[in-house]
Amino acid sequence: MASWPAASRRQSSSSSSSRKSAELSGARAQSHSHHGRAASSPAAYGYGRQLSSYSTRSSQVSSSSSGSFSARVAGAFTSCFVPRRQVTTEEEEEEKKKSRRSECHVSIDSGSWQEGKALTIADVSKATSNFSEKNMIRQGRSSTMYRGKLKDGSQIAVKCVKKLNGQNLTAELWRELETLEKIEHRNLARLFGFFERVADCVVVVEYVSNGSLREHLDESCGNGLELSQRLNIAIDVAQGITYLHEYKEHPIIHGGIRSSGVLLTDALTAKVAGFALAGTAASGSGSGSGSDATPAKGAAGYVDPEYLSTYQLTDKSDVYAFGVLLVELVTGRPPIERSRGGEARLTTKWALQRCKAGEAVVAMDPRMRRSPASVAAVERMLALAAQCVATARDDRPSMRRCSELLWAIRRDYHRQEEPRCAAVAEERSDEWVVR
Image (cartoon, rainbow, N blue to C red; front, side, top):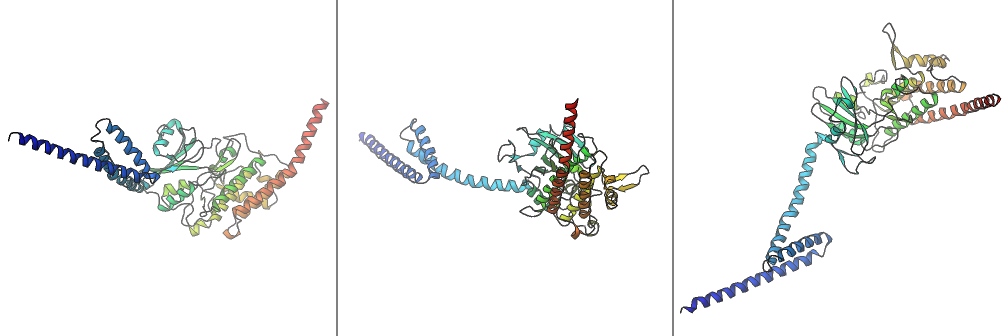
C-alpha cells in the first residue's frame, strides 16, 4: 500500500515526460515546417536566419526548451514586426502631412552633399552660426540675407523674409516653390530649400560670390564691364528666363527681373535669382506664375504698364522687365534716377528717345570704349529694348526671340571688332620692334 503512491508518481512522471516530449517534438516539427516555408521566398528567408540565431543561443542554455523558445520567438516576430512596419509607415505619412505647412525639407542633389539627404532648418541654422550678425550679407526693411556653409562645404545664401500681418504662404506658392526646387540651369541660381516659420519665411539658395549686376554697374564691385561682357550677361539672363517660360511641366513667370537680382560669378557668368520670392512671401499673395501674382517689391521702373490695369503678370511682363534691364546694361544707370532738384527721370524713356534721334552714343555708358562696332551693337540693343517695352503685350517679342537677336548682335559685334583689335595689336608689335 505504501508503494502505490510512489508507483503512481512514477507513472505520472513518465506520462508527463511523454507529454512534454510530444509537445517538444510537435514544436520542433512546427519550427522545421516554418523554416521550410521561410526558405521559399527571399523576403521570408531573413526571418529564418533570425530564428536560427535565436535557436542557437537558446540551445546553449537548455536543449529541452529550445523548441518552445523558438516557437515563442517565431510568434513574437510574426505578431510584432509585420504590424509595426505598417504602423511606422502610417505614422511617417501623418508626420509628413503635419510638417507640410510648417516647413518643407528639400533634397539636395548637387555638389558633394549626400544624395537623398534632406536639408533641415537645423542644418541652415548651423550653417549660418544660428543666423549670427557676422554672417549677415545685408539687411532691409522686410528681409535679411545671410551667408552660410553646409557640412560638405557648399556655400549657401539664406534669405529670411518677414511676414506681413502673420500671413502664411498660399498653397499656390507652395506648389511654385516645389517646382522651382527641381530646376537646374547654369543661368539660374539654384533653390535649395524653403521653410515657413511663425514670423518669417526662410529661402535657401545657391551663394554667388561676385556681387550683383547693379553693383558692377555702379562699380561698387568689380572693375567695370566692357560691352562684350554686358552682351554675355544679357544673353545669360535671356537664356535663364527662356528656360523658365518654356519649362516642361508648366511655364514659370519670374515676376521680379532686375539688375540687383542678377548675380555674377567670378567668371562673370550671370545667374538670375529672386523668382519673385521676396514679393510673394512678404505679401502673402499668389506666386510668380499665377495670373493674379504681384510683382516683386523694389521693382519700380520694371513693372509692366498693363499690370496696372489688369493686375495680371504674364510672360510678356518678364519681357518688359528684360527690356529695362537691357537699357541698364547699355547706359549703366538705374531705371529711375533722381536729379539734384529731386525730380525723377525714367532712364528707359530717355535712352530710347536718344536712340530714336540717332544719338545712341549719347546714351552709352561713358566707361565703355567707343568704336563703330560698339555703337552699332548699342543701337541694336536699344532697338530690341524698345520692342520689349512696347505698350501692348502682343507687340513684345518672346524671350526666346530676344535670345536669338542678342546672339546675332554679339556675333556681328565680334566680327567687326576683332579685325580692329588685331590691327591694333599688330601696330603695337611693330612699335615694340622699332624701339
